[in-house]
Image (cartoon, rainbow, N blue to C red; front, side, top):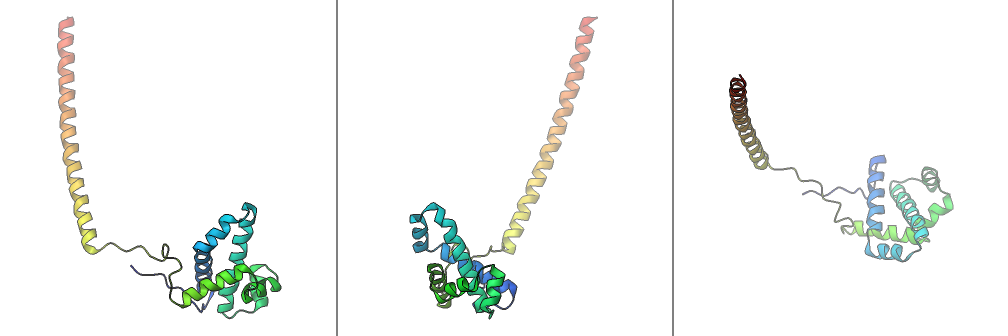
Length: 169
């Protein structure tokens, strides 16, 4: 199986979105973050997720070389909020940066998500095709038997009707 390529220095919108998604999901799935959210007031969990999302978006854009002003504009937040996340003054900013550093060290931050679907081998495909053909043949044979039995039932029914009609007369 191959792993998803995570661009640590994104070039272009798609790379930024990939890095942002991995940073957010990687941070949210960390055991320490899960524990913090579990202990937090349920009303604060949404704020937590939002802060992590903004921090992940800000860091991904910073790594792509965007200015704080441009990042703030894209994310719909104030420049001071973006700076706070990027400098690690906020807990969300610190956690997202830790996740980024884990990526830099080559650690898997999404071991449950980074695997892509493995394509079946040619042998598996051929085997499945053979099984499908066998099933189709069996279905055809059974349909033929069913038709013959239906015909026998129809003939028997007609014969019974004829006998009943003769008995009535």
